[in-house]
Image (tube, rainbow, N blue to C red):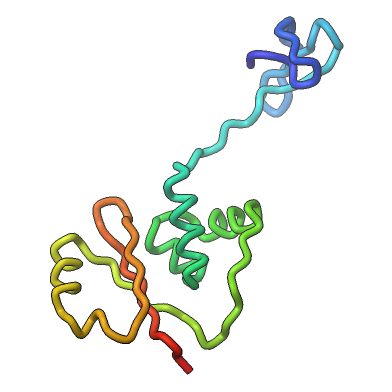
Length: 137
């Protein structure tokens, strides 16, 4: 703890333990505070990827299986950043996880490039290909 969260003073003393967390008292303002809880931090890369995949139409559980991040965490990030996905019940993309060689072979076939929108995004050492048909009824 560097400073008091109330007055930003660096003058404070220990003032007991509550719920197994050290409590402090500021000498300047008399404010009692505890050390903030340090939870598991997830890299911003995974947060960005999860939100991108959510906007592309993947469900929370699909994102969980792909990234290995809890679907509840993804749900919380969507709420936190107020992400709104366009609603369209007839729209749901398909996706594939490919390594570099498989991705190169996929794009060498001209049939794979016609009649569909595609997005490729990196997932660590693999790539995710998201594909949806244009003007799908």
